[in-house]
Image (cartoon, rainbow, N blue to C red):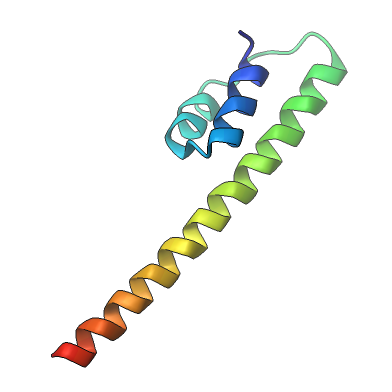
Length: 71
């Protein structure tokens, strides 16, 4: 399985850990098309990670509000 395929699967599964691991070892591409596909996939991975980051921030804020309510 190619690096691009593995990244596609990680994005579809929402596996941010796998995305992080894959982006630590970027392959060298022989064709412009493969490199462009990798760039598009990395862009999508960044969007996914940003979405998760925002979800986590919202959850943390809700927990802080609940904590202050019960304190």
